[in-house]
Amino acid sequence: MEQPYIRKPVAAGQFYPSSAKEINKMISLYAGEGGPKKEVIGCLLPHAGYIYSGRVAVQTISKVNIKNTVILLGPNHTGSGAAFSIMPRGFWETPLGNVEIDERLAKLLLNKTRHLEADMLAHLDEHSLEVELPILQYFSKDFKIVPVSIMSDDLDALKELGEELAAAIKGNDLKGSVMIIASSDLTHYEEQASAGKKDAMAIEAIISLDENKLTRAVSQFDISMCGFAPVTVMIKAAKLLGAKKAELIEYQTSGDTTKDFSSVVGYAGITIY
Image (tube, rainbow, N blue to C red; front, side, top):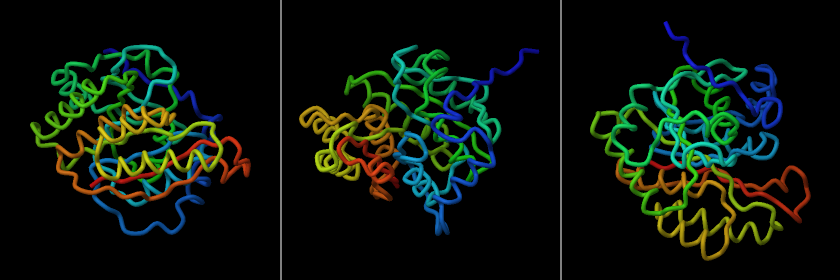
């Protein structure tokens, strides 16, 4: 019998600690007391090193009920693999254990969508999805994932993918058991005031659930938001799945950690429900 493929961690020891004990300790500090949890359709989470963006991501996830399956949408920073790449089977390993890919949903999406291709290459060295996993694992021991890496700025294709994701979820009665997480940082390497202004425009578009407004703002104001494509897909899908509202949970920049405000990266945590 064929052994299941295990995608090994590439960001452990760099973006987040390499030991389970240190990961749990770090996340518990960011999580604080927790509080009531909300049923959400989607989330925006940042994906930088935990010392920079971990608090934003943890605070956001600490406030949601993690569904049975998480569709993880992230940008492709490496340039490897397909433009719309789905990893259809196997496991992703982190220091907190293995997370299984939801093979059934991955197959449904592959059959339903025009753009997704079964592809491992885009995922092998990409950190944008991996860094979210230990945070999800800290709060839930029982969920599967569908990892999707996107390397396209074709707005029509992104919106179409969002429509197809929603159709596959609704058409298979999975609406209550699937959530979508888009992984993205915001403005990169600008001084704090400039980054804050640009990030406010991107956040306002996301909270308005307006993917067209988001892509216009990114283009018009040159917002260096690495994952605007995954966020566009998520917004489109979430609306078709019934989302009516979005809430900014946390915003900060790398300057809050480094105290160097001359060149920062922006991070936001947003829930969509």
